[in-house]
Length: 426
Image (cartoon, rainbow, N blue to C red; front, side):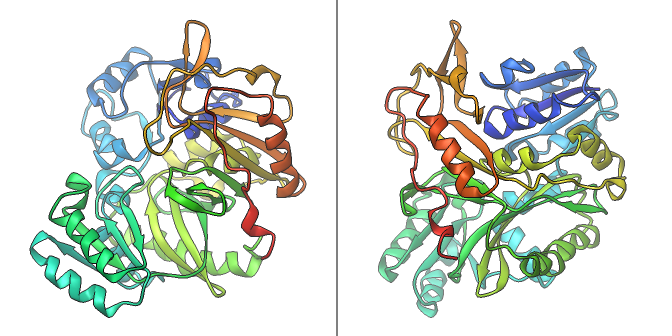
């Protein structure tokens, strides 16, 4: 098969790394890709939402399958674009159709889906500019902290949690009236705060059958001890030590099964990855959010633990035969530590040369915000590289990642030195 991956981050490098191992993959392309994918595939400088250019590439290179990495093309309907075009509708697209991608494209849509199918989640109400006064009243009925979520896609920055009621009201006004997040916050969802520890569950579906991948836990905050601004993720651990068999069974029965059957009941055409953001409250799982693609950096610890031929699984998803696949998981733990540009998630400089990559032996460096320039690997983004390691325990894997990081260097490189810190006491 000739396969095209859309995206340019650590998740897409991990996809490429895993797909390139399959004898079923003949030629592999990544659009636009990064310095990591350049080593194992052909990068093509096309944006992930430039559907016309993607079509031209698919026809030119006789692509059989398109694996969609990020959410934007899915929410904008890339799968539908293929289905509605005679020239390319035979191509398999891994990722839900537009109406189903609203599970990530709209927080309100997701909450309504959860309520409709009796899937455990936080109580909520949603508000617009016209009903901002009602939003103030609703905030007064809640106990702090207050959770405000921009309804649309805000590049992972649309969720604000505040302890002060007046600050929460001011933030609501800023989001709705002052359009703090632009189009994304023309509607805002206010939720009750759930107190617990978070984890991510990843599900593969062909629309009717499903398979559950290993759980993972990522670390969103820039600062150690989970402090500071939210980021796209500073590291991840898989499996999650506190996710016992009993707890995993609750996730499957109360959340995964009603989610997949909900797709069918609501006619949401879904072939792809379901990322369920969960929180463990007491001993019960509740859904914080849905994403309609794999997480990043969780992909960098989940896929390395998958023993199966990844292309075989993707084919089964596309063909509706996922029930015939037996998922095999590496018993070892995997961890990843994200190296970021100094200043991220605020302003940061680009174009810093990264050295020492070839010296890494005990870990897998997954490139993210990095590109080849004049034969050198240089930084091009905030999250630059994810260093993944295996270990018999997550502590052993983390130690290996940190030892590998010592061999790497770029100007103003930053990383958290406490990934996994909160798992020791559980």
